[in-house]
Length: 487
Image 1: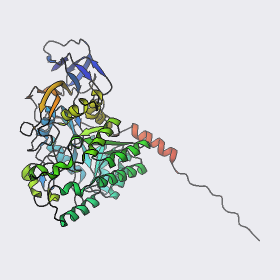
Image 2 (image 1 turned 45 degrees about the vertical axis):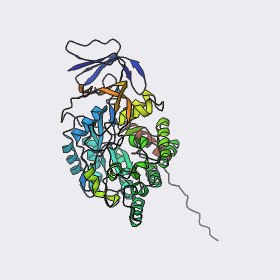
Image 3 (image 1 turned 30 degrees about the vertical axis):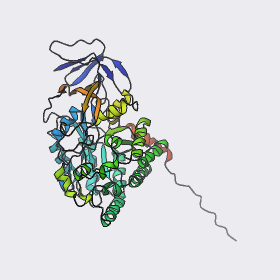
């Protein structure tokens, strides 16, 4: 099957150019002006529109077993919703339970993901440590295309990784050429504050942000950064939500450390007032960790995105419906943490980023696609409209509008954190693997069409680190034996 996307303006992270895009066999074959296509090729008119790389959401949780329930979004419905919103690839998470074998967990998630409609890959969490974890990390990198390992510094008595686990796992990742990722919240402090708030009689969703103030995120981010600094391993901090964490990243990057940051579309646009809404379902529907913050934090996150302090945007898409959230009706610590967004991320970022002048079109492409592809080592296969790349792209109409609502979205959840927001600039055509999977409201995704994408270990980061370690390696001091004085 071949497709000619004709008459559009191609927008990549590094340049914008008027060009046609010819697709054949699931790959982009040519990008240029006045391209011809063979007879039978499907035509897509992109006149007046932008042609951009399909989005990559580097942080989702489809079908996640968590807090006594399972996320309502499965890999088929979630990747379909992503396609509607212009996201053609996700990187999800394998999260072993404490003492669960990493390979067993990985195979379980791979089984669930076989229904995905779009391409996907996995970060694998390290939630405990012994020799088998050391061994399985090597197997995952060398045989299964995993190059990133996740560490939860929160969720005490569940999946929280103590410092010892971080140190062991970070060192092993460095040996393997893998990048470490962390959920940065001080789990001990969160647990302590939760108990104090419950003793005070604060049991509703308003207790959630009070138990996870910005300081607990900032402390954990800085601790992870310093551990990574000592062990010489690249670090990626997920869902930065506050001034304290982005300041820690900025400081580390200013010192030459390889630290990358991610921000969620929700944290850029939703503030903590949602937790004080008197409607429990509404307030609980916004419970996620880290929580939404007061407005000054949003302004700082936008500045960090503009400055390149944080490089990627994601959603932490992890959906729980009202009956599931009701488990915490009398105790906010039992509300399953998670919100949606995989369908809306690119639309809200265009509207509030490009349309406001906060982001250029090229920066939009970088933070929604290209930077994630580069950081997780799948560029230029992904993240570029260029000859040889996978034919994953969107045709974006900057003038069309859409009103976001749970009543009309394709996500399998009954709350939308962007409810009622009208956005200008939406994708009209999504192409995945060289096939049109969405066109002007017509969803054409196929269950199981998604491919698992191998991500090889890193060479550049770690060669630079090897040179640095060799240069700074401490040397033993050679001391001549002291002469014995004889009187």
